Length: 592
Figure: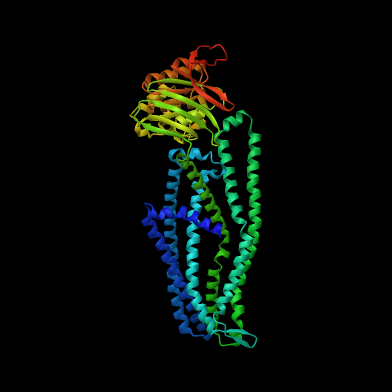
């Protein structure tokens, strides 16, 4: 019962917002129309049931005139049923795509808003494969919810309609066993109920494991697909390392999980199909077995027999909804659980801004970036970096150094506003833009012009501006390919990608620019050229760099170093430059 309530809460949390959102009236109208057509189909089935009695009695009595008339009645009912079925499907599909579009927009906004997608990576396996949850799980949730929900409603209304008919038919055709007749009120209804309850109970016992099996199957399929995509994106590195054999082994291992779990689904589905197929076949003959004595030895006509068979079948089918739909319900429950887990991960990531302690980014009326006391930590609460009285003014040139693993990148993430773990506040001028250039730039799908403008639109820049910047950063050979759509992450070298990243900074002209080893793939001469370009074109931008090369010294005026303070923890301290370029090409510094 607790699991049932939890499923109800998850379903309401995911499904209800659409019918309260900005697309609620079209959604409500479409849903009401689909339901109305479903109810009309139930009414047609009631008419078909009455038609069975008259039609088969006409056959038994060889009544030609009634036969021809009832044939015409059937034609009208069948035509109405066909039109109803077509438009019900059409309107249901229309509702499906509107609902799916709304849910997709909602999840994309929540997932991509305020760096939530990045923070969710720290959550663990509940946030696995968000691409599948947004693309596949939403589609399956919407389609299955409508299919199962409309079918369930139809079963309930069918039961309410035909149970009265079957109850009355029970009175007209009392139970006959041997030569004895028993007047049991509604015995045909009770027979259908007992048959359905037994079938539902056994089906649940046999099919319950399918929920977890389907959940795991979707996860294993997504993991395998993600591994293939990751291999494609890193094809050059894998080839250079001759890692094809290792990748093949990993891929085979992941696909083995797909196959192994699929065998489990096969075995469980085989048992369930044996049960449901047998249940459905027995249901065809069961009402005839119950009332056949009354037909052969009583006053029941052929039309009455066929009407009882039809009504019994409708009641039994309605009561057996969970038997026949169990496999679909198991799939739906697995999808619902995955979306609920996705919702939970989003809520967790967005809730980080409301929990304490945390790193808070405050936009105020000051002139520079100021930190009084700041502690940067890991998601498990372990502190890795501490700094005090850190201030950067517009136009400053700051270089941060430190040993590998000392927390430089985490510090930059915190200063960039995407790393909430820790304690303290970072104050930046209100309305100022911040741009962080990582060591490995992100190259979106599309044209090279779009990649240069990212995340802005290409229309944000004047005629020739993108071309001029492309030439300035040393990528002039790609001028003729600016509007070519390609997978540029594969076509550009690491150094070319970093040149493109610098071009973005020149186009966007941020007030605060963080470079996390953003020129490490370039030789020192190319690196110096790009830094001179930044200093020349962005004179009022505060540039804060992470780097190890001594050649960076000449482009910065202030220097900070992360020094060990305790095991696993470093403190950021301002340093006095000491030129020592002879030792391993590293930057030497002494604490001020």
